[in-house]
Structures are given as structure tokens and as C-alpha cells.
Amino acid sequence: METYTAGQLCAAAQLSGITTYLADGKCHKTDTAKSYRATRSADNSAVIKTYTDAVCATGEVVTTVSAADGTSNACATDTKVYGAGTTPLYLTSTMNYDTNANTCTSGVPSLVSTTVANVDTTCSTTSVCTGSAAPYTGTKCSSASSYLTDMATAFSSSPYVIVQKYNAGKSCAAAELSGVTTYLADGKCHKTDTAKSYRAARRADGSATV
Image (cartoon, rainbow, N blue to C red; front, side, top):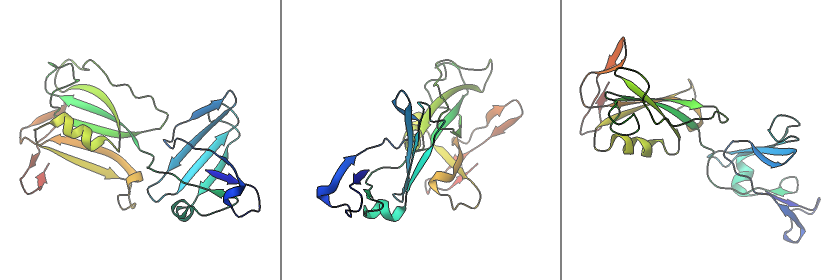
């Protein structure tokens, strides 16, 4: 965010300062009594919130950058805004395994149930299995930007089907993701809890059945 001397139409010689924010949506402390959150969308719009405490709780001041200004980098209220990237959604995944041989940290999972986490939620990847019988479960943390790569790594050469759910009426906009379920598509019956199970299959043409 470039700021310019007031009333000078953002003339280059009138540049007064530049502040660059990490737009990951998280609270960042800037000194003992100041903090901020910044987000950036795929359309180049952005929101910057500054606070008068170190934990993003009080004295909120919101600066909103429109998609038009974020794209054109136009001078608006003695300010120009530039940036890159998109603020990710943070995800918490419960990984089901048919065996606890790998302590639920590696091997091919039978099911991955993923929820969108609050940006301030602390997600911890587990190193041991939960449960005394199949399905054994573990927890992994990721973001929407890395999820597809994470699943490709987890399932390796095994077939799988990813089903993404979005908030109703939002045309599957990326920011409206509500949850993801990834199935091992080997055609076998997989138990998901004491009273539920599934079969999934994926074909060479990309079609699938769950």
C-alpha cells in the first residue's frame, strides 16, 4: 500500500510511505499495542483491518480496496494498492485408515473428511492413531491452495475421488468452500464408523461413482 501527500494525485515525487501486509487472514502483531489482519481475493480486492491492541480485538479500522482499484492500481484517497496471491482457506482433515500399522501418519487412507477451519484455529497434525479398531483416524492440516497436491501425495498411485461442497447459491466460488470428502476409489467396502460405510470407483474417462 503506497501512500502519498494529500491532494497531489499520487504523483511519484509525492510518495510518503509504503506498507506491505501479509494477506493470510491471520492476526499479526506489529508492536506491543498494534496488530492487523489482511485478506486478498482472486479479483484483486483486499481488506486490511488494523487494531489498537496486539491481538486484533479492539480499535478496528477497516480499509477496503475494490477489485477495480486493486487491478488498475489507481490512485484513490491518496493511496495506491498493489499485491499478489489470494488468501487461502485453512483446512483440517480427519484421515481414516483401515490399519494402524503406520500410526495414521502415512500409507493410503480409506477416507479423508475435511472441514474449513477458522483462521485462528490451531490445527495440529497428529503422530498417533485415534481409535482401537478400524477406521483408525489421524489429523492433518492444510489449506485450500495445497489440498489437491496433498491428496495426490496421500493416495499416491491409488485411485481416489474428491467431492467438494460449497455454500448454497454461491456458484461454487472458491471462498465459499464448506467441506471436502476424499474417497479411496478401489471399489471395496470401507467402514467410516460403527454404522456407516461406502464404496467408490473411478473410471478411465474421469467418471466416478460413490
